[in-house]
Length: 461
Image 1 (cartoon, helix red, strand yellow):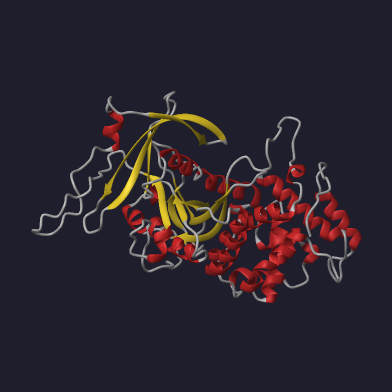
Image 2 (spheres, rainbow, N blue to C red; image 1 turned 135 degrees about the vertical axis):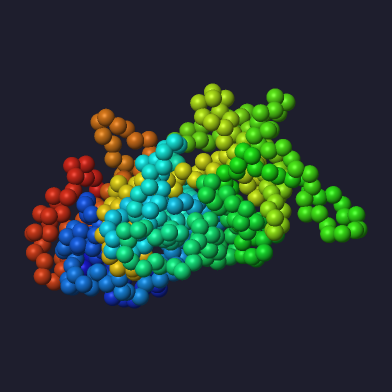
């Protein structure tokens, strides 16, 4: 029997969602995506994984464009694998954000003109053609990492309201949905995968809408979403109201009381009492901040009033602007609200690492199904590597790769990817890789990929 690397064997956990031929072909593409250092196109992956290629190239291309493959089912499998990394009785922290993958060409389906957050600034918006993906991830804390990590489990393509003028492909959807509406549908999927757990969803200002706040509260009209609470940005001039007075017995009962001072008014009031606390901040460090908080009802005409708590965060050193966050979990401590929102940055780190280490922007797909599947599968590979590393590597600290000019304080995703590559390389070096493969050529080729810092790794079977 030919030896198989532990990470490819771990891929068998996705077998219920795939047919046997698709699982076999996907295993070859996963090996190639791990070993490749250039574009993660199908041909790029096959070039890196050539010792395992035994079929025509079209068989591997069909994994993306024709295979029977359900992304929600794969996302559910990945989500349940990641659940092993969190406490069994804790609240699950979900993070949602969108990322732009730049694509050019008039015949690429789904391309729209979107704001490029990397190239834009506060005073200038840069618009770039590409695909905008909305991603829901599960935030986990691993003992060998110095920061929380977001594991993408569900990714959906967002389409702009207006089609780009130079794009000649037909639009995918008849009805346009905002990123907040798309996130609401995605969270309704995710909460079904763990019906006994409670969730907190954190997102930036694009998801701080009244529709999401109304959906993620204890009295939500959707029963499955009553276990979800929202943490997001709030407006400084946001209007909140006091509870309605007792019903007087005449006319329609009031749904809100008098308007309360806005966060901007409270922050500018010299009589406001500020609480100074130390919180977990960006960059895996602790920072002292000043906080003030109020509760109220957030009301919009035509809907019910939503109870919420907002908190203004002020830097005592005045190096940052004041920020205001809110949550539909009114009983949550103000310090926890800030720390939960800070965890939102973990999904931005995930996107950056996927671009630089997994070639997120090197994909070149032209069919509708391949475009729809390629980015979700590549982001899913990120989560798959982290889960595999946490469950199968016995001594994670020994996999940390330092340089003479930079000493790491904890394991990073680049170390996990290097460990996964060594695991796949050991598969080819320890046995026969294919029916017509010259083992000496395999060894010489793979040894050239092993860097000078190669050290044996201890992996659980």
